[in-house]
Image 1 (cartoon, rainbow, N blue to C red):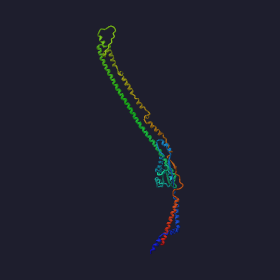
Image 2 (image 1 turned 120 degrees about the horizontal axis):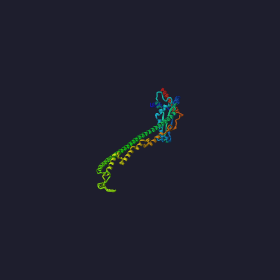
Image 3 (image 1 turned 180 degrees about the vertical axis):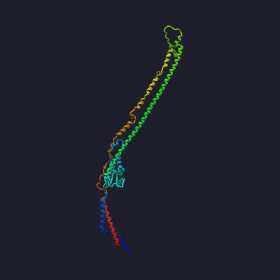
Image 4 (image 1 turned 180 degrees about the horizontal axis):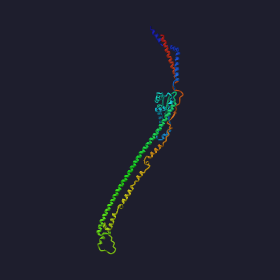
Length: 423
């Protein structure tokens, strides 16, 4: 009774030699299945859509290439900045869409279906683009670069697309830089014009203020001189009236004393004495002022008549002539006249020469950026000789292995079915 389980256990164990013999007996099945799967794999490798890969790499240009642009003083661009601009442009969806819109023929007839928009078609194509940049963890000889790789199916002009897209981006960046330079120049000219206009306005205001100040000072001097002239004339008139009054009084006294001719107190006293014969010369020394009536009524009346006929007393005061001279000089202020007659007023603006020089230099600046080189195309995209996928040899090998495995599996299934029927 104890040997029955051992017999069953031995029967349940698989004899490896027997298994190999059983598989060898079904070698045709295994070979047939392997052959069929291999044929399918070969057919797939031959008939599947072939995909190719091409790429282009650009590097920075030499510094002297940008010397003309940087020497202008308007726009500064380094080779690394130019490379970065081109790299950003290559990654730009806007640039890719514009290029795709203009060159749909390069992407093949199946690039976009009837129910798709350009954006949807480009979104599918974008997955096949790859931007190449240096690994920050590794040194690449010290030279930065930017590249564009494109994996494309048969029928698509991949190399033309990569080269064309990079060329398109470079051209668009060149145009963008030219526009930036133009805008910067225009903005600087506008700022200079605004500054010059502001200075002109300030200059005009200053000139008018100076003219008004000079005119006000002249008016003040004229008023002061006219006031002084009026006061002097009034003083001379009063002095003449006082003199006439004195003469009237002296004339009355002279007539009452009978003095017609100029006389002296001594001579008037001797007149009452007896006349003397001969020529007598009298000399009188007196430190007191002789009264006016001793001048005699004739002289006094003559002076009074002259004073009464006088129309102006200006000639009696030298200060009046001086005042009149100053008033005539103040009638025309030559400084005000020159200020009003200025023609090239910009020449009198402080910074006009510097601004005019800068504006002239900006207007004369003639930068030809149509052929500006931004990057060096280190490697242009070319059409590869072999496709990157499908990998035919690998597919065939995998097909053989898969067919062999499937054949063995079918053989084992057949063996198991036969045993089950026997039992």
